Length: 464
Image (cartoon, rainbow, N blue to C red; front, top):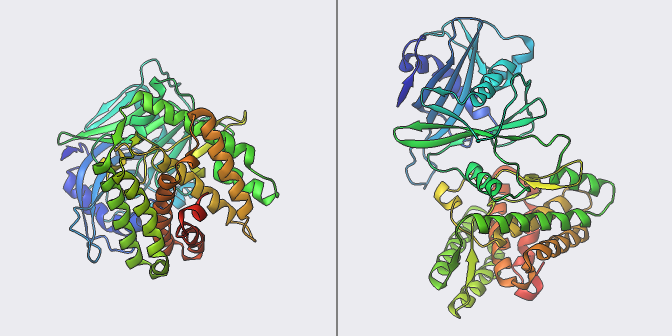
């Protein structure tokens, strides 16, 4: 553990004073993944004092491993590691009331108030200044891409949209994405945009700077600073707006298909590709089949469709057994309308290359068939179409077709010409969605179940 607490006492006494407050506060955060299970304790991974709390304001950076009881039937888990920025004040001004964590009653911060520091302009600006100056503070390393400049004095504001991480905008010039649940290793949310920037791909904002930590010889990527696309609309908001007006989204869907293909093409140039032969495809199919079996156990409503869904995977296994191969490469990994931004000029960008956070990092960094991203976007059009009353399946069908056509214009191959591979990946995504909605948003369960009914049909009838 890297102990860089200096003027405020030991790490142990600091955490002892914060622990009862964090036990209550953490489970209420949107980005906390362990909801529904009590917090039983914390283990410090890294504690770094960024501003000493001997004046009006103090600031601590914490990496904490959070311990909770294992879910029934799950293997033992060491606990997730979370990144926290804790501000310290004598008392909070009214504007910071939503950021309150609590009032400390013992230890080195006794009598002080602690709060989520990203809500506060000054602590957020401390992070930007550290990135600008390439600071080294304890275990923290603030890096800046060569040739990229960061102007001093940019005013910070926290974005309040619900998301699984936290984002701060600096003067409509930069946006800092602070990762909340972190794991050691190379994070694709930095790795892939850097590779794309060096490949000259303009469809992904190039990283300007980033924060990482080296703890016990393990690297943690903690935050990424990128240019902020002022006035941009995300694809989900834009699609819902057009649906509400009764307008189609065909031209935008086609443009999104082209943008996706440009990113895939650049990733294939920048990073290694592999050929998936029978053995690799067998592993791919086995993984899909295992996820389906677990989903049927978790959501009994899937049971009537299980044979048809298994046939989607079996058809892919049959092609593999006949000697068919596919190319795999690095992909986005969690592509949907909310991961796309359209600038005021009409250009589309892809963002958030972290992949599905619930999957292990090694799995998120594995080469995948590009159709995995395509399947995610096709499912996203379905979700948008079912967010209005009555649902608009014809709107979704037109968007799906336009997206695939736009992709083909750049990639030279229409995803629909490989229906078995596409159906298998879309089925896998829909099964994942069924489990997610059953657990978190039961009112939305009908959306993926509608897709499941279609995908469980024989191949010709299940095509997009």
